[in-house]
Image (tube, rainbow, N blue to C red):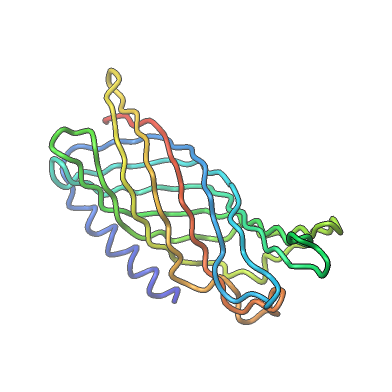
Length: 212
């Protein structure tokens, strides 16, 4: 798995090397709604929760309206595992799962003729920085970093708009991220009887880009 990820990165870097002369650099911040999908106990269900992200962008043009978007993003993604409890009308016990990532998305970006609307598609290599669970109502926190794979892979798809405000560009982007690899570390003990788990998220990003 790790060898495949390294091959993808090397190929992308080699492709970027033959780039168009224009280059943009900037920063981005955003919020996300993420959910974990996979095996769950029979009396439990995953529920999406909110998180946030911040990072830097490099927009490297290979044609006038086509570029490679390379990013380095810190993101926090949260999900709730809710358990049904006897004699309760609504799920009562819950397990909050929070995972911090360093994400390296590499995407193909195609801008429309008006230089405002664009679409992106690509892959993201995610490195797990930390992972925690919080049990409610017991109020117990547990470090589960060793139970989560150190590397994972996601596919990203998004649409956005960008506006020129003087020299820089201001952009807004809606992005969907689909997990492609299992987050559970097979060499560690199972997490609450969960042996397979993938992360999906919808993100709203905004930021600014400067032409260099």
